[in-house]
Image (cartoon, rainbow, N blue to C red):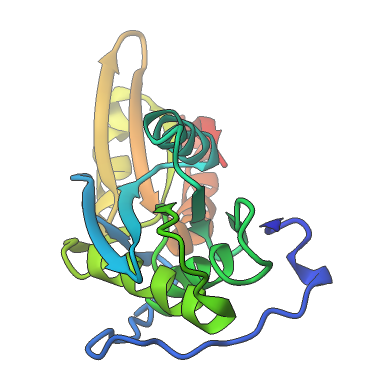
Length: 231
């Protein structure tokens, strides 16, 4: 079974117990902050009834990078019985797959771990080499969950901020007004180009952008304008 955020509403997604103690729920403090894993990939391996489960955790920026990472793992373990995965870029951008395992026994448990720990921009991949003994539905869920947890517990969790990236243009005489606004809304000043006017790359926390933009519009007659914005 393979499910993405586009069609998950057609399925009854159940909640399953977490089988390893010490896995806290991490709630977001506000809508700008989110949790993700370190950029350093982590892997681990467990054995269950002679089946080998190899888990990988990667930080990914978007679904295209997640798909690429998964393809690389599939190529590396081309002779594996299953390569199951789940990625969660954000709460409404995710995908998971059982890769031939019984429906709901692999991809969904992996996705539920990401959701439970509120992890974004993260992909979990668990590769299975069948050892000759069938584990049953409950056994598969436990095996995939514990393999992934073993890797996650070795991973550093980081808190990051969601930003809107934009380019603002200002006259020289109003440069300090723009800088003051950026500081007021906890923004970040990036690459700056000096020509007839000053062009500045900025990052503004997502929840503060509307108010920041409102203030920018108030100064539009003074030559401060947003000329480009990434959604």
